[in-house]
Length: 448
Image 1: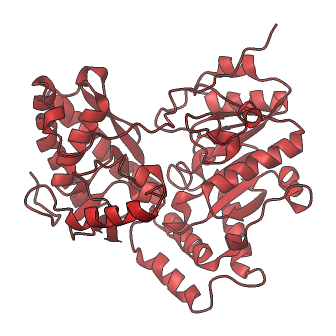
Image 2 (image 1 turned 180 degrees about the vertical axis):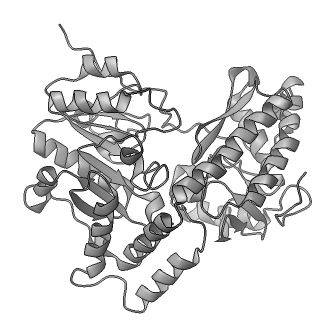
Image 3 (image 1 turned 60 degrees about the vertical axis):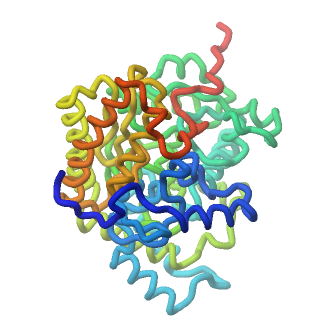
C-alpha cells in the first residue's frame, strides 16, 4: 500500500458518536436525512460514519474524529474542495455587509453577467436556490411558451410533482399530474421520434449521466425537438462547470432552449440557475410566476462568483478530467490484474465515474456494501463514485489506487467463496428509486 496519508482508526472506524446522534435524530426527524444520497440507505448503517463534522480540501472528519478522503463532493457541489480559501474569503467579506436585503443586490447582476459570458444559451438568466426549483421553473415556462402540457424526461430532475410522479415514491401526486410526464431511453433517438407529438411542451434530460451520448445523438435530439415545436432542456446539475466551464452544451456544441445549473458553481453554497432563450425567459416577467425570498441571498452569490472565477483561472474541468482518468483507468487496470474485471468495472466521464458490479458478482447491493466497508476501513469515504474536485491531489489518487489494490482481491475472494453477506458489518445498502435505466413510463407510440 502507498504511504498512509489519512489518519483513522487502526481497524474499522469507531462510530459511537455518530450512532448516538442518529438515535437522537430518529426521535425528531422524518425523514432522518435531507437527501437520500447522504443517508444510511447509501452508507451502510453500523459500518459507516453517519454524520460529518468538518472538511478541508478533499478530506472530511466524522463526529467521532475519523478522517477520510472524500470522493462524494457533498453529492456534487464541491468542485474546488472543502473550505477553499478564495470562496470562503468571498463569503466572509460579503457577510460583513449582510446576507439578505430588502431590495435587490448588485451581485445578482454581476453573477448573471458572468453566467451569460460562459454558458452558450444564456441569453437570459434566472437565479434560484435549488436544482429542483429551476427544473420546475423550466418546465413551467416551457408549458407556458408552447401552450402544451406533456413532458418527456430522462434522468433525475428533483422532487416536484411533475417529475416525481413517475417514480415509485409518487404517493400524494394527483394521477392527472402523473399522466403528463413520460420517460424515454437515453440514446434511443428513434423511440423519441416515434413518440413525440404536438402535445409535448418540453423534453428534459441530463446530457449524460455516466453513459456517453452516441455520436450525433444530442444534435439530432435538438433538431427533432425544434421540428416538433418542443423545447429542449438540459439538466446540467452534474455536467455544468465540470465537463467544461460552459457545461455539456459547450462540450458537445449543442445549444438547448433552456438549461438548469446548480451544484458545482458555488462550491457548496445553495444557488441554482435557469438559462435560456430570451423570448422564452421573457414570460417570467409577467405571465409565469416563479419567485423566492432567498433568490438574491448574497453569501451564495459571492461564493458563486468566486467559484466560477477559480474554475476559469485554474481550468478546473481539465484538471478533473486528468485526475479522474487516473482513478478510472487505474481501477480498471487493477481489476484486470487481479482477475476481478469479470465482476466489476469503473465507467463514465473522468470528472465523475462510477464503480459498477456485474451480475456474475452476485447480489450487487451486498457486494457494494462489502466494498464500501473495506474502503471506509482504509480511510476513504466511498459510495461507488469518483466525484472529482480540484483539491484531489496526485498523492490522494495514489493512495486510493493502493487501497483498491488491497481491497479488490478481498472482494474477489468473498465473491468466489460466496461469503460476501456473512462478512458484512452493517446493513445492506438500499436501491435508490431513481435508476435511470429502469423506466417507469416509456413514451407511447402514437397510432399511425
